Length: 364
Image (cartoon, rainbow, N blue to C red):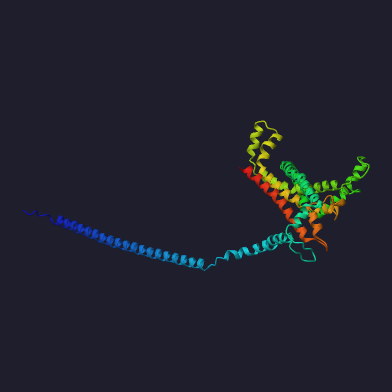
C-alpha cells in the first residue's frame, strides 16, 4: 500500500530532493571545472617543457657554434703568434748577452786590436795568458779576494740579520742605516773610503793622535794593504744587501722551534747553531754563490782606491782590472783581452757549478 504523507511533509520531502539534486549538480560542475583546470595545468606544463626543450636545443646549438668559431680561431692562429710576445725580450737577450759572448769567443781566437782587424791565431792568446806573470798575479788576487770576502759576506750578514730581528725600540733606524751603503754608488763609496784611508785621512790621523803609530799606515800605497782595504770596502757595502736575504729566510723559520729549544734549556748560542744555521743553510749557499761571482768581478774598489795602475806596480790588480788594462787604449789588444775574459768566465763558472753542487747535496 502506498503511504500517503501529509501535505506539509510532502513539501519538505520535495525540498530535500531538490537540495540533493542541486548538491549533485554542484559536485558535477566542480568536478568538471577541476577536470578542465587539470587539463589546463597539464597543457601549461607541456608548453613549459616544450619551451625548455627548445631553449636547451638553442643553447646547445649556440655552444656548438661558439666552439666551432673558437676552433676556427685556433686553426687560423699561426704557430709563431706566441713568439711575437717573446720577441722584444729575446731580441734584447740576443743583442746584449748572446751575441757579445759569441763575439768575445771569436775575438779570443784572433790577434785583433782596437784600430785594426785581426787574423785567426787559434789558441795562441790562451797560451800567452798561461805564460804571462801578470795573468797569474791577477788570477791569484781574484781568488784571494774571493777566499776572504765570501766567508765574511756569508756569516756577517747572517749575524746582522739575527740582531736586527730583535724587537727593541729604534731597531728600524739601524736596519735602514745598515742598508744605506747598498743604495750608494760604488764610486761614491770608494771615494769616501779613499778619504778615510789615505795617509792624511781620518784613520791615520786618529792613529797618530792616539800614538798608536808613528808613521801613516800605507793602506793605499802598499799592494797587500790596498787589496785588504778593497776587501773591507766590498764587505762593508755588501752587508746590508745580503742581510735582506737572511731576513727573508729567517722569517720562514717556525717560532715554535725556538720556543721548544728554550724550554729544553738551550741558550742563544745553541739555538743559533742548532736551529738558525740549519734552517737558513740553503740561503747561505745562495749568498755564497752570489758573493763569489761578485768577488771575481771586482773592479771599482781597486780602481778608485789604487788608481789606474792597480796599486804600486799593479800588484793589486784583479782579472777584470787586467782585462781593462790590456783591452783599452789605441794599442789595446782586444784579442788577448777577449781570451782573458773567457778565462775569467770559466773561473766564474767553476765556482758557480761548485755552489750548485753543494746546494744539491744539501737538498738531498
